[in-house]
Length: 532
Image (spheres, helix red, strand yellow):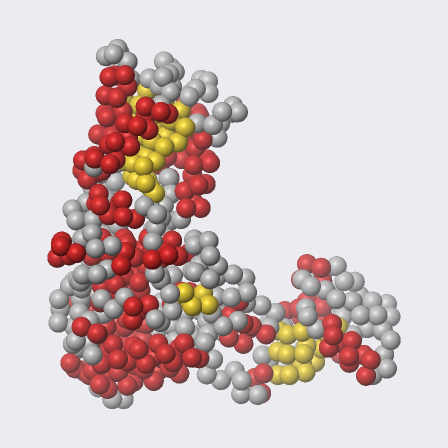
């Protein structure tokens, strides 16, 4: 691929008039049969020798195969023009994503890492459309603590909303009345709600609305999913499915499938959702498309008050990754640095493990053991909660940052969009950690980001910039500027935040020397960076 001009120039210089054929994919290359006349195969670059090996297995002569650039000499399969392992270029390369290295950019695995990453600075253009509406209804008292168990669903979601705030919201109730007045079919006589501890009250509101509109005639049937069957729908002339909160809609999809199986005929159907908290707007639109389609030309009705995408399900993994890190530290007995004795390292690992164990439902604390907190002036709160700033929970702040980052991933302007292309990666600019200098905001950005968005290892300048910033954070861990030190060190230790390998090693060595026993939990996390 892309070497036709090189091959043409070489052939012209050699006085060769051979026909040159180009193949731009493995699939098309497989169609090449062994020529009956003299031939020469030229491969642009390789990291595995896979193409040359495949040709040799198909009876092509290894003497007639040339690879221009390879990471190793492969005498069994081809001649290698430039062997990178003999040039020193492969030394000190950082890992890109765990499976690739920077050099593979010139190989047969073409990656967007070949181009410097695009930096995105988060700001007001990334504010989600309905964020403020959600915050006004839930921010102070309506968001459960991080990883709080919700017994009604038997799960520990990282972020979840309290149904009481939805049911008591004047804006929601006004929307509810107006939406049903305009869109609810008069044939609806069956109300179905999901068994999640939040939707039954909403379902009963629907029944009251229908009963009041029908002048107190027979009330609609109330069914709880999944406790109904085919016989329960024999008299159904129209169905409304109600749920207070929905993520990507797994339950709604299952209810829809069950109804298709149980209904004798295609009858009017309406899906009513209070708040949608999907991973992305794309997944929400796919859910709506799935639910409204049926065997007729008329789509089913679909209503939702507000939708706030929170991004891929990777936030939960940050707590899981820390638990795995603590488990690994339990089995370590040696220090990776000569400046720290094994005995001191053991104390640091123990402090780190204890810190992680104590924060299963929160962010890591500052170096004084105090929970991270928000101060006034948070741009996405628009001064609406400055007088209640002490009541803002970590879960409310994390929900806000998660939704903002997802809005950035879906932004229509390519320059503001936090989404990679086939040709270029995208990262959260280091400037964000200076703009959002509250410790809790920095921590939430680290937790809610994707690993690729914190990968500074593919650009030397960015890696060095982050190295210098992190050194200041770690060495000032006892001051407000460095209160998120444990979170930054944890992101490094679990491999989510990446620098060049040499920069990482230099950073850890210098920071540990400075921090030492001042904060053993922080030192333990930094030592784990080198142990991973």
